[in-house]
Amino acid sequence: MRKDHPKAAFVTGVTGQDGSYMAEFLLSQGYAVHGLKRPSSVSNTQRIEPLMQDAPQRFFLHEGDLTDSAGMARLVQQVQPDEIYNLAAQSRVDVSFDAPAYTATVDALGPLYLLEAIRLLGLAGKTRFYQASTSELFGHAEETPQSETTPFRPCSPYGVAKLYAYGITATYRRAYGLHACNGILFNHESPRRGEGFVTRKITRGLARLAQGLGGPVSLGNLDARRDWGHARDYVRMQWLMLQQPEPEDFVIATGQSASVRDFLCLAADELGLTLRFQGAGATEAAFVARIEGDQAPALRVGDPVMVVDPRHFRPLEVPALCGDATKAGKHLGWRPEVTLPQLCAEMVAADLAAARREAALRVPDHAMAEPVGD
Ligand code: NAP
Ligand code: GDD
Image (cartoon, rainbow, N blue to C red):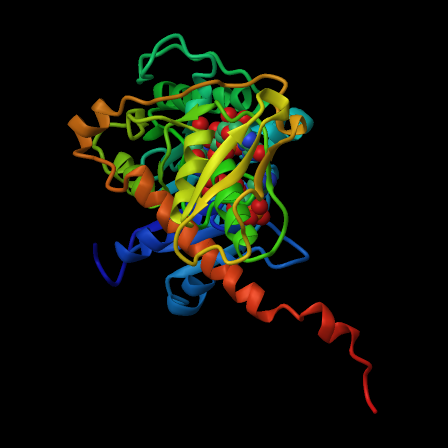
């Protein structure tokens, strides 16, 4: 890439997990990166602080909201991007049941606004478009593992909104010749994962509990199975898709699935804890059965570490997902590099370090009770 005229990428959702890894990756490839950041009264740039400091000449933030069609057209016109990565979304499946109309506006109409901007501004020959599609499209899947040819049966407002986005992306590709691709990504996690998603809820919750901060982790369906990879691996694939001469859709997954219960046990193991489960369904709980090492000084054998809370059950659940990324392997030479135990270990280590810092700063109760002054 020419240094005096780098490629320009527009990344929506740049403050999120994938957006932050994507911006990092694109900067390392020499791009000028323009990120869309939602206006916010409190800081939402924690994941991209280092980039704002290290690459001020090539990393630019633009305030705006994906639901503002005119604002998006104005930004696309201003940036004249070579590539758009549409990563912004209301990405919580559970939240989509409580906020279905909002989820549809952001997740279904948002991508349409960007596609329309490319078309109406006459950028179809220049700007390539990546849509963050999802394995939630498969929903109650008809076959396992799921590939590009598996029928879609979404079963959440999020999945249905993302199905519209998938379809409109493919339609603009066919109707107007846009270089527009869907990456059908299975779950991917990292230490930057939002705290409401189950893996991060577990690693953060257990790490804090181990340091005497907070109570047992409260979870919903322990038997749901997901195909979990590392977000850093997956953004590389998103970029590779836009480098292809012809636009195509790809599944991206590890091909292995594990249950929420498995992930809980893996995370506990990282902290030297063996768990004992008791009860079933809505009354199930997990307790410490054995402790090795000194990672969990606040816990004793018999202490509860997880309780099931039926409030976390979903009105409709996707019981199991497992992807077949053969096409990505063949066409793009892509293979996931990080295994689930490695991913879990990285997440636990980051959350344990944060919990230790927090515990060290905590003012002991007896110190609070001391009288102030003479
Ligand atoms: P994430 O961490 O939740 O990030 C979502 C991003 O979208 C955040 O930057 C958020 O801004 C932004 N956003 C939300 N609503 C917006 C709006 N109305 N206007 C502008 N920005 C808005 O999600 P992620 O895990 O990085 O996922 C990235 C994309 O991939 C999403 O589209 C998600 O649906 C999709 N996906 C994710 C996975 C996965 O397992 N991670 C799998 C398949 C597909 P704030 O920081 O201000 O909240
Ligand atoms: N969030 C959450 N919280 N999920 C829980 C909990 C809990 O306390 N307890 C059990 N689960 C189960 C959910 O019912 C689901 O079956 C599974 O854990 C994974 O939930 P999430 O981590 O919230 O992820 P998701 O699979 O619903 O959605 C994620 O992956 C999709 C790709 O398949 C999100 O990143 C979506 O944006 C993404 O499209």
